Length: 125
Image (cartoon, rainbow, N blue to C red; front, side, top):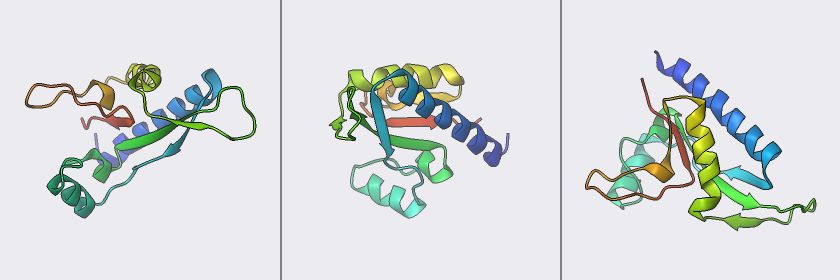
């Protein structure tokens, strides 16, 4: 499958994730990193803030900033970073397509769990 087809499937599933979030929960979100240049990915890797081969560079990953709005309609929401708040979205994300991976389930190549709960990606085929 060519990259543009994978990007289209990724964008479709991000849309489904956002609809799920906005219709099934009291959470809202803003985009964190969506696209990342190769230069930025290299800088992040050099400074221990990411990896050089980031799927953000291929437009196959997005970080979402999660907000708990409760039942408020005034837009006064609270930023959330707790793993368990993201977990339902990670499970839903991975249920959409076998190529979808949630950062909350990442494991280090050295054997430990990596917590990157705001990260949603599509593994290239």
